[in-house]
Length: 305
Picture 1 (tube, rainbow, N blue to C red):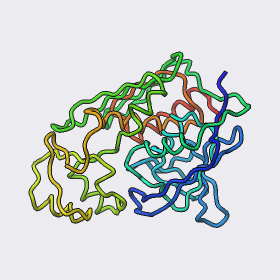
Picture 2: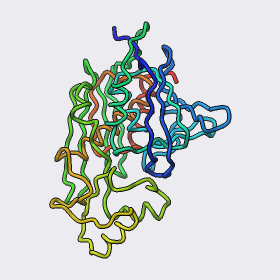
Picture 3: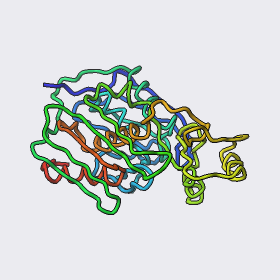
Picture 4: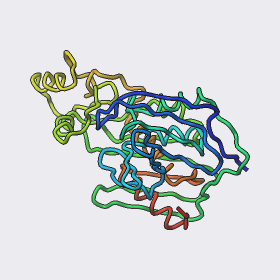
């Protein structure tokens, strides 16, 4: 029997939101048994609560956004992944703006902060969802498939394929959640160079600064284009590394994009409200497909929310 866990003390992290560009602070507080993971918007009257559950997902266009009673919290997936990997069941997260800080584009800083705060075992049994039958979600339009099937513990396999010359077919595998800290926590989000200006034009990535994402260059880019993007992100200059990525970062792993997709999937699966005991296999996962997959698990397994 596993016990529920919270953190021993409160801990805060500050930074800028990726899409909104808002500067804000996250503060994680210990919470009582059966509290679950909840965000509290302390910048709003009455400090409204948003429960981190899949039923509250309202947008998945460039991240997972949750909302309750009209109150939103953007881009929660990296935080949720860090909480799941830390085996934290109960926590209250104060946020003084709409979007948590993107930090380095991974879960590492949040994971490290939670670890520093310490974990506290609580006198209640952890609720887990043991998968008893194979469940398959497909999205024919994007060609993705997500499967969960019975197993003795949680594991996850991810495969991505962007039909790109610079980002080839990649796979990532996690056989136990304990591997997250050293193998996945630091893996950052990524984007194609050609998407950058489109995202900016749609009033997104206001908090992007080329230090929190891997940028892949699929097609030949002129010096003029590089200079323009450098100006947009307040850089003196940018260049192209061997392997088709900008020189803003160095990869931690050759398959870092696949590892980041695995990280994202863990975060979205955590919106189930309890850990899964089962084997997950995902081909071309994304936030929409991930959260629809979780909704399907809820339906097929009769999970009460």
